[in-house]
Length: 189
Image (cartoon, rainbow, N blue to C red):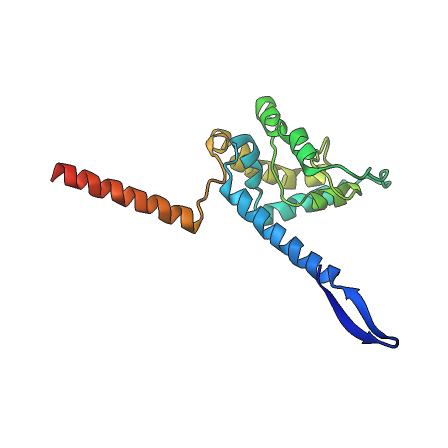
């Protein structure tokens, strides 16, 4: 850590520049993590969570869920739970919903789901019953969700995620392919 000297009442005091340095390090780590998620190959069961519901349909979904909020606040969630554990818990849910014929959708922002039930975050929600006046809205949502997720299940299950090359790697592979093509042309011609 770099310490800088500033003048106070009694002369020079040393003050650590920790907060600024910590912010810079955190920003760099965040950027590196985002690039790493793009570069690494992601298997299809995990990659399916990158395909979320569009904004307009998600807004309609949350309006419907807000009508069926629990009346009393639930107990506080224990801290220390990690995203990796949550991923392991919800990884089987899309396959189970497809097998049982239940319409499902994936929505970004776990905290938005948590707000519906009065928690910080939540991984999944389900409606067990709906009032007659909301049936029409629910049927429209179910129809759009089935076309986007349930009917496209095979297509979603086949696609791997990530694997995007950086500029240097792409240039290196291009160079190797050009050399091979040139070599093949010399052998033929």
